[in-house]
Length: 340
Image 1 (spheres, rainbow, N blue to C red):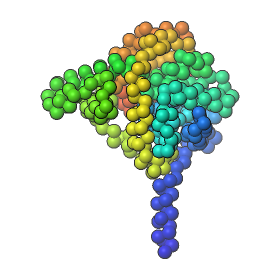
Image 2 (image 1 turned 90 degrees about the vertical axis):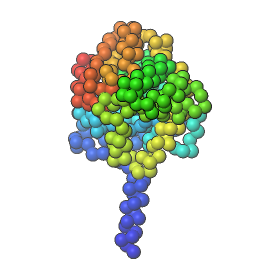
Image 3 (image 1 turned 90 degrees about the horizontal axis):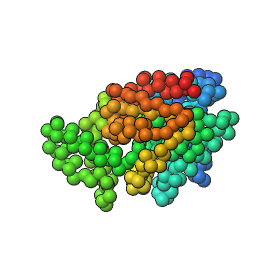
Image 4 (image 1 turned 45 degrees about the vertical axis):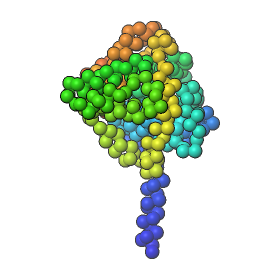
């Protein structure tokens, strides 16, 4: 009887328990906690071997693709030089609730939540500026914050910048179709031919799924992988997530994307943010066709950035530079800190 009780207790614990992963330094900071942003409980991870180091806030992709363990696993060296803050945005990861209204998932609300978190971090650590890093969808939040509140940031670090969603989807579909033709893949060509890159039909989410499936297969997401298996493994083995949180991750991601995508298709930073008041560096994968590199290059050339701008190419990376070239990415992020 006792054995069965212990087995049930272990199963329940494994299902619902989560906590911070161990930190290499015993004198560092390692917190996994919920804060209220926009009146809603949202989860953050704060990790660093030196609590006095500069603060780096990371904005994940998606919308909805939270993974608190991503930087810890793929760019762990950052924790030696920064206090690294990961935030599971409203409706994603540990911050997802199936009972929360999807109507709150708007670009304006995400920006407001992020602005509130930036203020909270500045107060917590007694600093005037923090470093801001965004990846994919996170660059939409990041560039919006950096353009509206440049005095809050020592620099904005953009990884796979989203520039113009409508133009990006046209280029991304063109790449997938051309790749299908070169490969002689008739199934891919037929499926992709049914996709409208404006994604304005009632079944737009299914069509987007088709496009992303073949984009992944043809190397536009990862240059060195053609599946999401490593991402799934990273998510389910992350101590920061309970089993139930990891299991619910796809629901939160799907809801976040479904609610926000029509609004995001109107984003165009050529028009919204022609100038930037804080230093900015763009990290661009040469093979990125999720956020097509041509648009980032064009935006960089057009951007008025009196505080300084830089563009760094990753020749062996596609969209997810954290996966394709993590060591070079780490070096380049630390170079931003050294060149402050």
